[in-house]
Length: 608
Image (cartoon, rainbow, N blue to C red; front, side, top):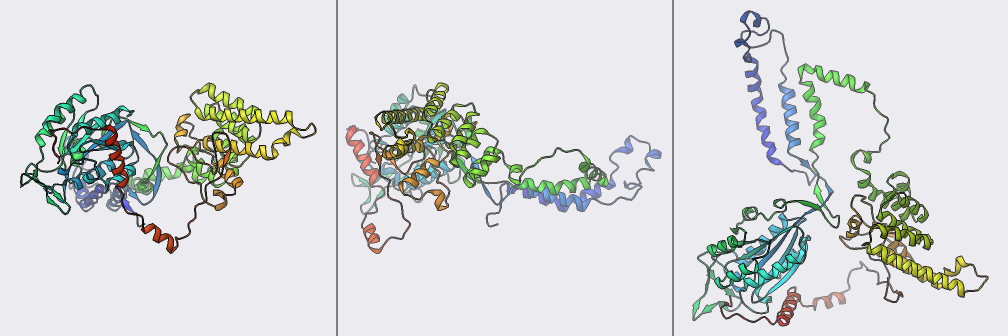
């Protein structure tokens, strides 16, 4: 219970009404509810006494009402103590953050400095945009893309700490180049609506017109987030003091009015940077501020706390019924409900709370043989048979599901069963329904190549040799390895991968990682099932097999198995010799881009 908390704690304020319940009930008993204005007194007197109480004795429902209110309040507050996987959706909204990395961002007019506050704000923005696409561009004398559009916030967060003006190849303040670079990222394929966010302290007047001209025919608005104060502050440099110009200390001043004008001219909003999320809300940068949600292309899930307050409704229901009309309604319900006819249902505990598509992945991973008998969906059943290495049964199950995805998986199962001609026909069926299914095309070509190889060997082999055993030696091993290598990469598709979305998310079938496991066993590496571990799931792309094939179809050696043994003292000493320079990669990347572009310096640009 260390994780116990309330998702909506403000509802607990409703508990303050419990001490006022006696007053409310007392006032209700003393009131005649306005009947005296309608019913004559001689008729009303036998029913209601002079002080507003009923002529019959009644028990006060105060205790029951207080208990019901307590239970309902806790339920509304959303008690939570466990996390469950939740399907992750992403907005069709893209945001490119253009961060100023000029020397002026080191000014100390705000604590600790402008750049530190800007990077903290970017982290806050990423927290508010979980599941949405975000990119990061930095600029000084030139602009560079730190990260393209991605829904993985860790990609950007991991690079924020190393961002510093010293990694830029040349000093400057070319905001126009930064906006142009951010616009290029959006035009490269941003889904749905998109916007640019310029995070800076000021933009030179000569670049504002260039930015407006760049965004003139663009559908993407530009918003500005202002860092720093109008009074400004000095710019410190490590071991060099403050930046000076003509002997005077330079005071880098922010220009909120200029940035406000720039944003309004380009269809955006402008906001000063705040410690809380006020600026993020006003600029409408959150995921929920965008238009429409769409399923993630990779069927990603995120662990979120489950609201278990609904369980308390079963406790509040009898309390409410008991307090209603002296419990008559509760007595009637508890008496009649057991007598009502109910259909016989043989459900397990898991079936009460989860659909088959939600339970199937775990069932197949734990016991594929049992899952093959319990699952009703033919594609899920085929996945279970495939994981259980019963490929003929898997092909029969996939044959009952008339979808391109099922035809593709049926071809994989038939190829595993050695029925190459039938596998080619299954791949053809999948390609006829969905011509863009590249995985089916690649597997079909490989199976056709293996079939031709078998036929040529049958013709050139001895007449008394069993044709079914001609591939049992080297060629058969290579063929099987080739098939397994490609099948592992392009086999059954995982709903957590991009290939799961390729053939339709409605089927929601699980990937079969059997190919990688079998290939591990053939290449000498221990499989995941042998180690008792669940196969690792990758966030996107296809599962990697233990062996790979080169362009000529030759099997390549499997990579060395990772070991978890602690490092020796000599290895640790070698690791300590590696310089700790996390920004070195970005520094070299930016320098190479700067030299390739041969960006010309602007005489009107300032070095800070």
